[in-house]
Image 1: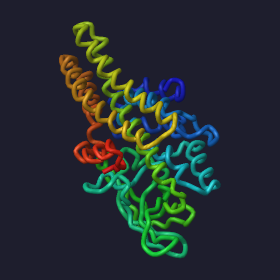
Image 2: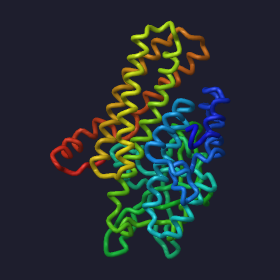
Image 3: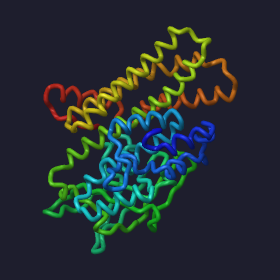
Image 4: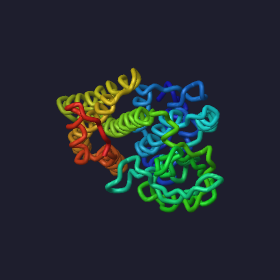
Length: 357
C-alpha cells in the first residue's frame, strides 16, 4: 500500500482504529482522495495498474489498518477487474473505466449474493423493456458502499436479442438516478432500492454480446474476489498477530507459531495471485477457493489464540482486539459457503466443470 497508495497509508495511520471503523468514519473519503478507486484499473485508463499480487498485498495492509474499509472496497475492485471485459463497446468502456479512475468513483456490486438459495450472479432486479431502454426495480445490499457508491452494477433478465426467450444482462446505474434510494444505518443493514429506474440501452450489456467470453470473465472476477477478500481478513488477523509479536510477555513459541500460521496462509494466497497474473483458467478459480477455505481454517486457529494472549490489556486496546477478531473471522461469511461447495470441487477433480453455488 505504501507504494501504490502512499497517501492512503499515511492518512489511515493518523486516525484511531475504532474511529476509522465507526459508521461516520473518514475511511471511504480517505480511500477516494488517495486514488484508491483506480487501484486495479490499467494505467491506460488513468488507474494505478496494480497486478493481482499487488492488490492482494494492498488489501492485506488495508485490512490491518481498517478491515471494514478493506472489505467494502473489495466489492469495488472486483467490479473494476471485470467491468472492462463486460463492456464490448470501446467508447463506453473508456468512458466508464477511465471515468471511475480519474474521478475516484466507487462502484457497488448488486447481484443476488445475499439471497439464500440464489447463485452469486443470479439477477437481483426485474426489468421492464421499452423503446428507450429498460426500467429496473429491485433491492440489493452492496456491503459498505450503499451510501458512498457512484455507480451500481446489477443483473437483470431481458428478452433475447437473437430469438425467443430470455438472457441475463448487466446494467450500470448511476447512484443519483431518479428512483434510487438507500435505507438502513449500518453496513450490514444498508439496502439500495431501485424503483422503476430508467436505464438507457447503452448502459445495458447482454451476455450474448460477449462472444462466448462470459465464462472467462466470470472466472477472472470470482478469482479476484476470493483473493482480495482473503487478503482483507488476513490483514485483520495480522494486526492481532502483530500486537502479540510486540508483547514480550508472550512466550516466543506462541509468537512464532502465530507468525508461521499467518505468513503460511499469506504465501498460499500469493501463489494464487501469481497464477492470476500469469493467466486465468478454471483451475486457478478452483485454487482460489481451496486457498480461501485453507486460510479460513488457519484464521479459526490464529484469531482466538491471539485474542486470548492479548486478553489482559486495557479497555481501549481490548475493544480494538475484539473488533479485529470479529473482522478476521468474517471470511467464513462470504459466499460461496463451504457446505454448498462440496460437490462442485469434487466434480472438478474428475474433470467436470467447476460451478459456483
